[in-house]
Length: 107
Image (cartoon, rainbow, N blue to C red; front, top):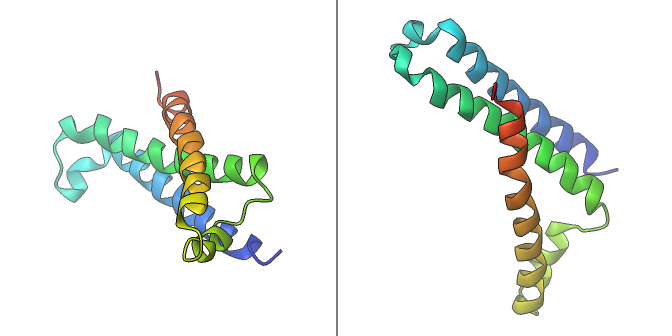
């Protein structure tokens, strides 16, 4: 329960940043001094922010018993084992991120 409030704050900030970037990519780039050619990368960055939020939710759902703070503290005692667990989580998230990002783009 102690991770719910920070997770909600993180997810809210990530989704808000993504929606702002997607909104900017629509037709508001000239108001911030960017050319119209910057719309696709800005929109993709917004989708990446939203994909990061979704990947965070998926990590919490798939690995709900894994506490990364615990592994960070344990890395001082046994760095190889803790590092392998964190590396495995990073590999799963790295595999999910392109899929989620491409699903969010207009295709």
